[in-house]
Length: 178
Image (tube, rainbow, N blue to C red; front, top):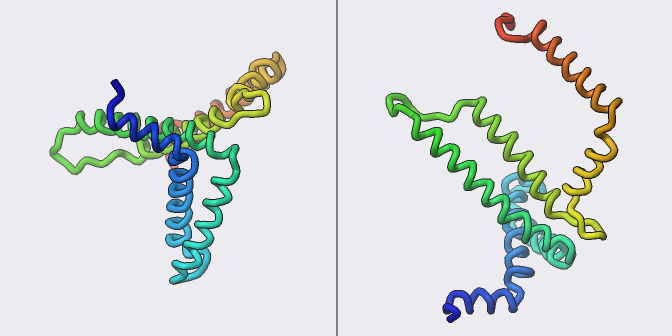
């Protein structure tokens, strides 16, 4: 037996809520917030910011190849946020409570870099080419088949070792910085 909530979701799906209305509202809201925060269109120009956001959101909804990317990538990004918050909760559970809890700058930087990389990988996995392969699969195949040849790998290893030696000698642990 189908629940009333599932029937409502099915109705919204057939109505185009997830394909048109939700992406429109999302793009409009994000653009409007960015325009208002940066004041790129001028100070106290809410109407202009709203109209430009409205027009761009319609263009995004009209571009039919963007909507599947958004529908595939945004749930994965939300999952990534849940994972990040879970790690922060686990880190916080180890906190003694005697001093103010702050996530260290290194951890903030690390989480930010990992989140940025994850978002890029998620979108690369969501965008498809004409044959139906995601950009992530195409890039991986290119790396494995074309880049992972002997000369390229040996050059990367040589450069990595050179950078490591320069870092250890010049800026490594124990080096006093001014």
